[in-house]
Image (cartoon, rainbow, N blue to C red; front, side, top):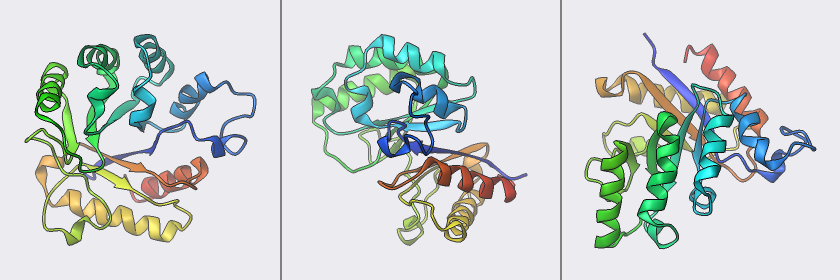
Length: 215
């Protein structure tokens, strides 16, 4: 039985998606709900949640489909702009549909911040992906990851505008082969796509490739 691969984007507030994906008159507050009608997961950029309030998180989870999953981007200086208590309270609202915390880049974190992050992960009982201060963090699969030695991950980060569907199919095949090599990744996997010129329509086409391949 093939593994299910969920597909989503890095963020949903992309101005170049106006008219091409979002209707021109769609309020910004409604974009996540509109996005969740098309896709079932998203990686929330750090700059999205650094200024949000608990009410914003309530609006987020109230506006998406029941099966929708949030991944939250973290970084080394994350507690410089938000308190542990404030972030914990906000993420607790998302908890029913909060999948994991993700560190896209390797960043240093001070001892105090490490302790705070450890308490956050423990309180929310979340998985962590990337070069994080959590010793249990899983690596992120990237297209070049196969050149970096063997490891296994159910989370893929793809920096591509997906304009070439044949090349996109190769990405799926590589990630699927990676998943097949480890029983621990059985269940659901996730691919997040990010690129300055990425169009929502290309993600939809990419999802069709996944469906044709049985994922």
